[in-house]
Image (cartoon, rainbow, N blue to C red; front, side):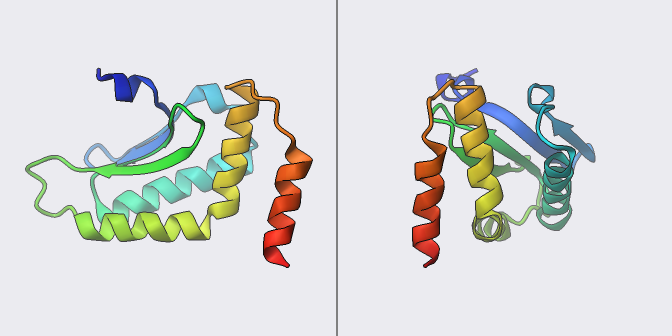
Length: 126
């Protein structure tokens, strides 16, 4: 396993080849509604695009959406995958930001000034 992969922690993912969904049990403290939303998001992605789709945290606690396919998979939509990821990042921005704060607080042990971070969001919306 490369150093880069070791610095990542998979939150969840789906695999179109095995028709399976994975949710990392380390995150079972997340509300069921969020777990369900992630499940739907991952499965729909692989049904639409194919391949393997994962939602991962990098070493800084930022969420990354990743997709890949087997080399022999001629049906995988590489361009559609990249476009769909961009769309999800826009549509689910608040969910992903909340998941990043959750991870930074509970897994990385950062002392976050959540009020200051949410005030910044309010200013962006005005």
